[in-house]
Image (cartoon, rainbow, N blue to C red; front, side, top):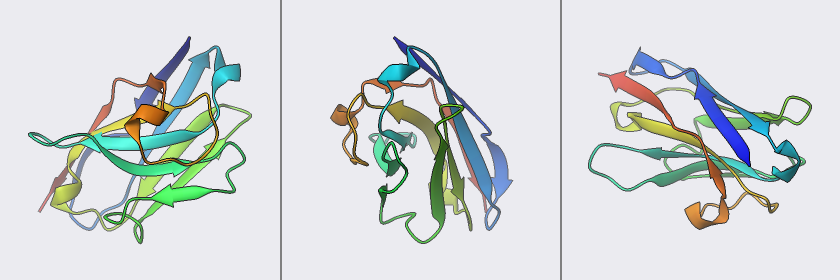
Length: 124
């Protein structure tokens, strides 16, 4: 089994930048693609960004494409997401996800392991 733990959430002002990170542990040999999803109050969980094992393929949601950067460190089995120019609509719980398959897919069903989430709140 793979355990994922997110860190780096918090409360920021609109226009600020924030970086969230995720550490994998346990049977990390199973980790291939990794991704970030988010869920705002009263809304469904949505894809934010994904990255392939090698890091060569990255995929972003249209809502963050010009403002976000996903990266990973395979020596530490971590994945990070930096979002710049934050907006109040970026407020959500951000979840880290990992798949046993490769590919920066934007579908929740593609990912087998999930972290508990970290809250990001953006104030106007």
